[in-house]
Image 1 (cartoon, one colour):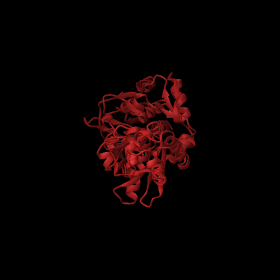
Image 2 (cartoon, helix red, strand yellow):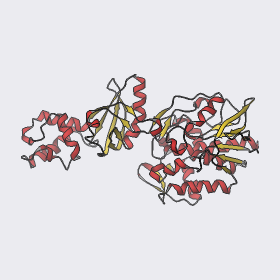
Image 3 (cartoon, rainbow, N blue to C red):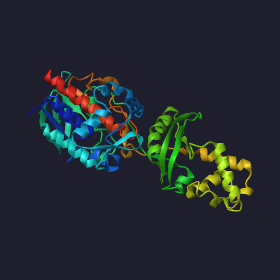
Image 4 (cartoon, rainbow, N blue to C red):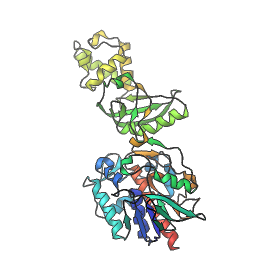
Length: 421
């Protein structure tokens, strides 16, 4: 049996690649080792599927810190607005939420998954599940087909590898595609977890003093050992039994890994600004106002309307202020120290959770070996890559799925064109 194009991997990139190739006249096989397509897509966005982001292309590229600029060429032919139009044309009405995130009105990821699969089927894409690929067959610098673990071979002169990275392995992303890329001569840059919770050995973390405490609209900053700011992100976070998680922690995670590696250190300092919209002077005025209104109230009870109650003892301890004191018992210098901690509550982190626990894989097929206009290998004729297997990674918020859809569409279109030329 033979096909014009074989797509390996039934995630967002593979599904879009299959649809794109078929729309461009190719006879397409979409093959996946699992029993279901779109397993990672089905749990994305908390099960609601953040299909893309409504921001301008430049802003989207900025939110893909892992080589987002590589996508400019692909975006010129198929971008986030095209993704929105694509789904709306298929009957999926989308809605925009905070930070430009686009979700189906149904709030159900399976709506997106089913629609993509049905579109592929309607176009005549042959779907083959429960079919692990053993190897991609190459000969004379040309793709020739694939060999399944059963020993069966399927011929094709155009292979699209959309097998994903190594994050969330229970969805099928176990890094299978890296070996096939290496067999073709490709370099795999160092893999690392991104968009992943952060770990810490600080005493208050180990004692679970703040476990489960959520902070909203704060700023989290990563510092290098020379006390220079690496990155700051604003949003929400949560303390856990092992460290911190939530949107801002996930966004900062890759910079912690990179800073630790760059400076060859086993810990990095981070800090939280609990009131990013207020200056220290404004906070001092607020605290003085609260204290003067209730001068006899114990300090531990004084700021319950201003701060999360469970956080107050730790903040007071850092400033060496007794909880039982009242406002007048505390010197102005101590209040300044307390406020300093509100603006820069610093602690050390030791790294992140594992790549298997990450939302996104950092690293992958080296982009210098890929044509950005077509997603075709520069080393092997007829070999294309798309999605998370590439050395591209973005923040959560629809950016990674956007990269998957855009690279998938590009790979599918040009794989089909190569066959039909």
